[in-house]
Image (cartoon, rainbow, N blue to C red; front, side, top):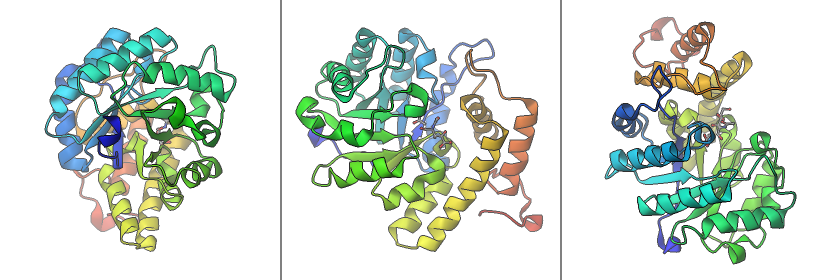
Length: 320
Ligand SMILES: CC(=O)N[C@H](C=O)[C@@H](O)[C@H](O)[C@H](O)CO
Ligand SMILES: CC(=O)C(=O)O
């Protein structure tokens, strides 16, 4: 039963989908990628085929294969694998949900359909419910990302009474900066065992204060270790250390955001930091520029986020 599953906690890396130079999925590096997350970043949960994974740019068949590969390579190594199964077609979404159940995933997540959009809460819930029903034993997470879907129905409103409609509802992945909405999701559901997973990595500390139980994000692929240090400091109520860690992370994210930061840039950064080739993104995205890569690399080095370098002595802003 879904409700007996252990709660999803801590950091969840939104996985990149590695690709070859020819734009095909590069399954061959996923095993290495799992080991890197677990051993180097201390991250044992993953969120597959989401924004970072270019899930909506993959075919249904590719999405199934990617999910299977992560499940296979993650066996006995990862704690939880959540598969994003959102799609514009309800049928496709249901197929992916059933498939996630078949391969033994720990949960499914769904974004709001973003072309022909649900215009109110009830319409959105009805769509989500149909998807959830295709995998009745799997924990279900709603993936709230209004800036990308254009569906701005507040999460707080959506959560009101959701378990009556979707019995497998287990939590929320909240990728928005509206901490009033996020805080109210937590406050109004205190007696329920929901997971409140925050998705704006540069603001995670504020969300922890608001009651986040975990976080899903792209930067946990390569800043997982650093972010785990922040979580540990927060746990032991050492707020000044936690804030220092958050500021370090912010310095990097702020820097790359100003250069222009998205999935393409995440692929380039992960390639730099992990040494595992993530390849180019799929059109319409375009690969990160040489200038971006050089500047990001220099910044990673100065913040000590690139372990291979030894700049510590002349480094004033080092975050280690
Ligand atoms: C829009 C987007 O991709 N958001 C990611 C997850 O939800 C985050 O992990 C961001 O990449 C990160 O917070 C940097 O802004
Ligand atoms: C960041 C995130 O959660 C995603 O890539 O879907």
